[in-house]
Length: 253
Image 1 (cartoon, rainbow, N blue to C red):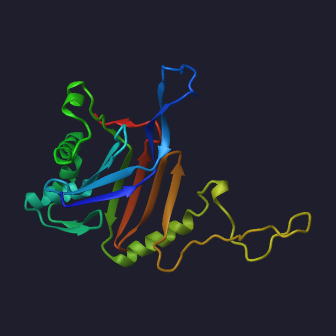
Image 2: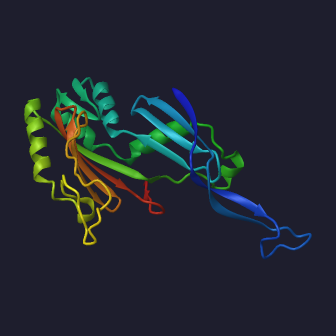
Image 3: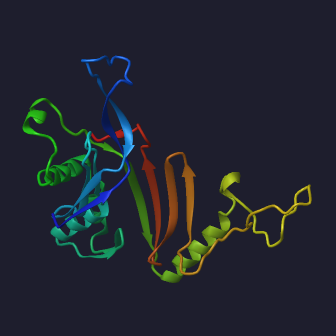
């Protein structure tokens, strides 16, 4: 563990109530009820420098039911494995720019599985203070992990940066019409007047490229998103992110 942080964040937690508002309440027999409410408890962040995964962290809510989140990067895991095997490589932010053994790097990335992630969670949980007592664990109370968000990406490195920029600019120009109607608009440099001869409020414009901002393509479908952009002007990165959504986690088995 290298750093501990704390922040107040909104979450859903249990809260108890006692009083005459409950139907079962009567004098001399108070009734306590529980329900989930929105609250702003402290959340503790525990950051690690793991030998197998590199940077990773756990976030723990201080209110019952003590929700816990873990975050780790598969690219950092792959870099750590290659370094351990003595394979030289040039790192790229969340990727590899070049590697001495491409086939070995591919096999290394392909063998990453849930067992490696479970092992990381076990090491971090062994250090983080637990709100569960020994009696709680004897009673069978523990965390059950699921995947809240999974990101899978592909990085294609170009031999020259100018070719990467040319591909990106051509792709953006060719895919401007892929958005759904409610997400698309026209570039308009005049005032739009409706039938009542009244000016339509709002600014009507579509900005494709903003100075000092790397352009990217994004496609959204329900709780999934795919985006393509240039990474450091050298590689084409295509990222697909899948979120489980509230109440629909992916079991981590």
